[in-house]
Amino acid sequence: MKQTDAWGASFLELIRRASTDLPVDVERRLRAMRRAEDPESRARWVFDTILENTALARAKSLPLCQDTGTPLFFLRTPRGTDHLHLEKAICSAVARATRKGWLRQNAIDSITGRAYADNLAPGLPSIHIEQAPVRQVEARLVLKGGGSENMGMQYSLPDDALDAGRDLEGVRRCILDALVRAQGRGCAPGLLGVCIGGDRSAGLLEAKRQFLRSLSDRSPDPALARLEARVSREAVELGIGPMGFGGRGTLMGVKIGSLARLPASFFVSVSYMCWSCRRQGFSARPDGTIARWFQP
Image 1 (spheres, rainbow, N blue to C red):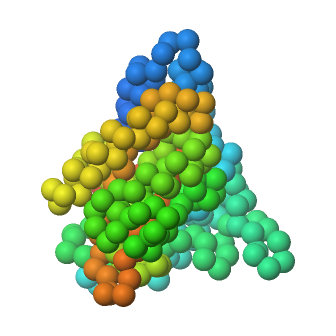
Image 2 (cartoon, rainbow, N blue to C red):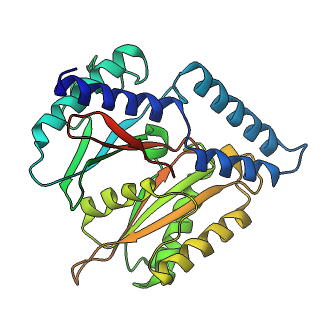
């Protein structure tokens, strides 16, 4: 197999797995949240339906959701790697995955309303490649659905309406406000990726990078780890529940990162991910074949 073909095949399998196979840690969290709901409640029924859908998608290699989302590729590469070659292989894989049905024809021209049959369009797929101290290419993919993307929020502190100042208490108020505004829309239980600081564009991208983290991890910053845990506890008390039907299962977790900011700006960027937290990743040999799959 030629190197180009190997890279294309590896990225195609990455897309297939992300689209059809829910990560183990996400499914484990959903099962735990199901057990916490009243057996006769609508919340329990919602979780039963979600888990049945997850099993069928995995068994039949079918998309977990009709909205297969925006493909967000995050790559870390060794020095000297040809980034253009990787981008070409990714685009080829996206087009093939669309033809196979693992990706829906999601790309729409914002001016004309015309659909792009292969999902290759300005801004799509979204590819982010950085050189890093690694020996092999590390590729990760997040499929970000449009419904959950609509529930994202960005705040500029101070925010008088929330009585939120430029501190972590103000950040907490912003995160909970975003969750309350989302309610069941965006297909709760959701996962929140948050970035404190940065400019408007960098903050939202860093918020989405948080979705690459395992649900069980904690921020290495003790203050942010405490804030993640507190928001997770308080989300239960909101009673929004899965799909907004009420219950304890409102939030699978919250992952918070930070970037430096300018004195004049203090942004809090909140990205919302639906229960179908579709992410997968691998490391690859120089010829493009997969060395190992990342496990959360």
